Length: 299
Image (cartoon, rainbow, N blue to C red):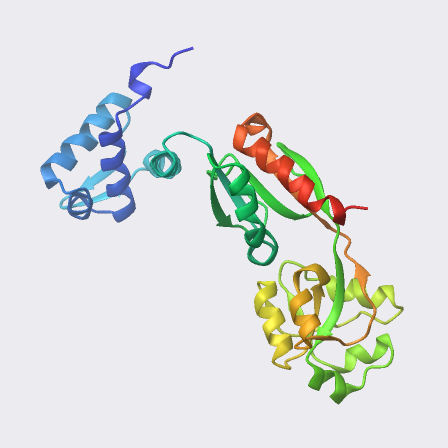
């Protein structure tokens, strides 16, 4: 059913309102939009008249959002961001076929990026945009078609495809290994342990797997595998690292297993996508290719 015209304001009215709401100033909004102050004021007034709602309190030379205006501004900002993203995608690929993918930074850089040329060569009409997302997000609020996710298969409102499991190993520099002379799992607790913020209990699980007390496990925190691995290479401590992402460092000897005791992670890698994007052709092509690429790594 078509919405009444008054609930579909024009983009110039919405842009003027959003800019004024964000900057808190008609003058700043006018400067941003390359309009006069009076033009911005007229557009905001026209929007209020169309919606029959007051959006700003006007106090002398200042403006202040009403409670309703504040909520409306945040929702409009999200809508304008999506329109901008859609326009940029269309400009980048005017014939369609754009896939916007949220990736985990280290997985994206080390595993996915080197393989993407093969996918793009086989699918020349598809453009892929990559965004970094470390934690879950709401597909309804992000202009994203799909995401590479590490965790469990329960993502509300999304379809999920299992990609691969993960095995981690305690890794460190050769110098740190020799200094602490690790011989058994309990010896790991003598060294500094490096932690990933997105996996706060990883060391506890590893220690418990090998019968070591896991209470009061402390150490430096990092938000990405790339930085925690570099810290381990620099001798700052021992890190639990996925074998398949750090094969090069382990093969070259820059990193070595503190103990050759790998452990299967409790979580896995998945491709997830909102149910309403399931028939998007670039997503179908990418999903089929990704499942084929990860097939050797699945049990």
